[in-house]
Length: 116
Image (cartoon, rainbow, N blue to C red; front, side):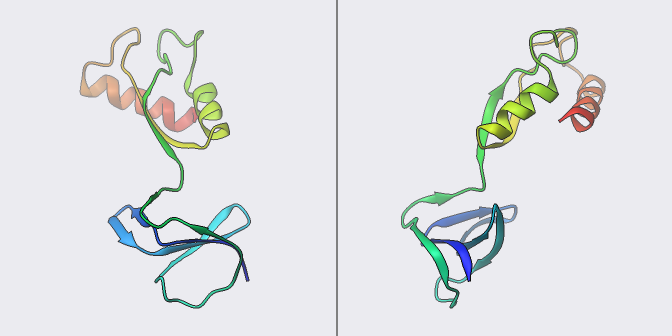
């Protein structure tokens, strides 16, 4: 028996939206199944007509790294995001120096991969 089943929503996956139910065990997604798939759950959530995402996407974050990380950095921004249910954030390039080239973007991405 699963802890939770989210029924009837449109589930967005890396390959696009699908019609599926989400099975949850503990704090993890245990599976995506067809709506008619037999699986018992302690709790059911009706998501009919709704979009189902694993977390929130914040399209406007300011990590201030590099150059202004005394205000915020990738570590503190990612910790705050995770605490609030945000699984993905997009960093704005208002830093010193501005992220205005492919080389600086690659450098910034390496910092993010290390610190997030």
